[in-house]
Amino acid sequence: MFRPLSIFIGLRYTRAKRRNHFISFISMTSMIGLALGVLAMIVVLSVMNGFQKEMSSRILGMVPHAAIHASAPLDDWRPLAAAAMQNPQVLAVAPFSELEGMLSYKGSMQPIQISGIEPAEESKVSIIGEHLLKGRLNDLKPGEFGVIVGDITARRFRLNLGDSLTLIIPERSSNAGGITPRLQRLNVVGVFKVGAELDGTQALINLADAAQMQHWQPNQVQSLRLALKDLYQAPQVSAAIVAQLGAGYQAADWTQTQGGLFAAMKMEKTMIGLLLLLIVAVAAFNIIATLIMVVADKGADIAILRTLGATPGQIMQVFMVQGTLIGLVGTSIGAVLGVLAALNVSELVGWLERLSGQHVFSSDVYFINNLPSDLQAIDVLLVCAAGFGLSFLATLYPSWRAAQIQPAEALRYE
Image (cartoon, rainbow, N blue to C red):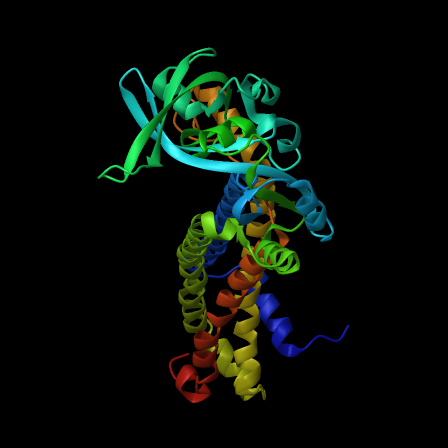
């Protein structure tokens, strides 16, 4: 079967047992290092994807994907909801109102953001109903001033169902100071836990109770909350709906409230990926040392090939084939092991926890109690391309050096 001379000799050098076993050891070390670097990059990027996906589902499941605010309280929100539902990107609409204040309990205080919700509608646009540790959304009955607090708040104040809290709300006043505090007694009827900072900053009350605190009519609401099919279309969708509704309405979306967090997570993933790429680069450029020693070891063979008519380009291709094969094998092994590890990292961590009896991710310390992993094909392809590309680049200089060997000089002392 026809095979180009450079490929035939390059593969033969790779398979042959070398006289210098140290060169073989360096070559194997380069291959193993490259495989470990690729494995580490795939696993770490998959875990970071898992964390980002987990935080996205938890945080963006609680905060509005998009919201429509009115300049004045809405007397009837349902016609506006029907108009918003005409947009194909909108899955559901629910009313809500927001207040900011301080929670006080037995001398302890903390800032809180109160969301007034309609219990029957909230489950359409929020995941809160799936994350209630105690109580139900229907326990938020109008006129009873019940409140559902986050798990962090409940543990900080050591709250139980039925406990009473004091909500302090700043209110405009005609006094000299301009603002006077208003106190409202709230009864704990539930506790939620979504595993994010929202567990310590958010609380829920009935929409009618929120209206009463703001001196509105019981049926009046502040805003409409939208659940969307595509989160990343939120700015465009909300702007389109506001343009359709006309003057007197403003749009807001999650990129304004939580965009900084997800931008930071994306930057963190990028920086960690670049740092891990240095590990791959170190392993890949070990191929340079390997090939330089091979060139020195095969100087006489190169000279004989040159005297038999081999061109400098063919000599260069011989060692490029050898180095590229090392990179290809190392990258392939690392990719296979990395994919297997990324798919089973949660089970591996669970096994280590059972074996050691220690919780790596304790729910008392971290927001999640497992190690999530989200393997993405694009990450695997980019990592493999980077590993193979770096290993190919590492072959250029040693191959060029081999092509510069002069037969007379190499054979002088043979």
